Amino acid sequence: MKTLKPFTKLFSGARKPKQEPLELKPVELPKPVELLNEHSKHFLTERYSQKETSALNYATVRDFCDSADNMSQVCYLNGDLKNVQRPWTIKAVLGAVPLGGKLLEIGGGIPLVAGMLAELGYDVTLVDPYEGMGNGPTEYEAYVQQFPNVNLVKSYFNADLVGYPESSFDCIYSVSVLEHVPQQGIKDVFDGIRKFLKPGGSSIHCIDVVIQGDGTQAHEDIFKEIFYHQKRLQELECLRSDTDKQCDEMLVTLKNDLETFYLSATGHHLWRCGQSYDDFPFRKVVSLQTCIPYIPSEI
Ligand SMILES: C[S@@+](CC[C@H](N)C(=O)[O-])C[C@H]1O[C@@H](n2cnc3c(N)ncnc32)[C@H](O)[C@@H]1O
Image 1 (cartoon, protein in one colour):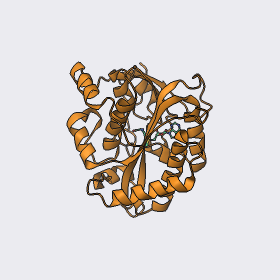
Image 2: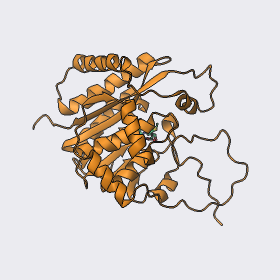
Image 3: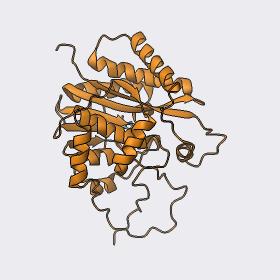
Image 4: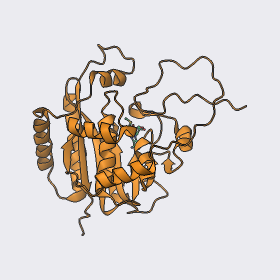
């Protein structure tokens, strides 16, 4: 009988075990996952469709609680930022893209968001190399079994992605991915978005940003770089000084807002992944979120 590696990390929050089990037993292939029933599909569509999302915003406790009440399928209570980011992304897509639209998720890892959007009636492609980058998963084969309604493509996303015509997606989105892309790669990712997004389509992203503690300056700089490229989708000639100013103002606003959602101590502990606390001390992390339409300059 074929011996398969046990699938130990199918859903978030669960991280790589510190050591592999000693004995590898044969396991059954994972079964398809169903996240929604007919009632919840109808409810979510009614509640979140055609609601506008602002170009730049941040995760709030209010939005988290809305998600805990109404989207528990993708809102776990383990203190991780993804619990607010994944549902926010689904809401933003429902708000911007009519059902049936073609979506591409960059770096989806565990295809929970993609799977739920597919069940809601979208045509979803997820592009991820599944090499474990940024604490991401590697269980590509398991996800193919579990999420048969999502087109899973094992690849990096950029303008060289093969098999898809230009301007073929109504929305390209990501959850906690762009901050893991090395700075020189951000432009490549946005070249891909520009190539594969239809004019008028939406570019939607959640970005983890450290705002206090180790790495703050680097994180804020990465976020500014991402937002500059994002804004250029809408306004090719926009000035970097203007987008930096918008980011700075947003950071001031969120630091003064009681409602700002932070990565919790529990979430930080999961993120630490077994490193010593001295090597990986607590830092304050927020989710910056952006939703922008692609308006090519010639239109
Ligand atoms: C922190 S994980 C986030 C996973 C997922 N979005 C979620 O919500 O759980 C980052 C993921 O981005 C993927 N990734 C990084 N750079 C990428 C790129 N250029 N194209 C596609 N995926 C990428 C990694 O492989 C990893 O699975």
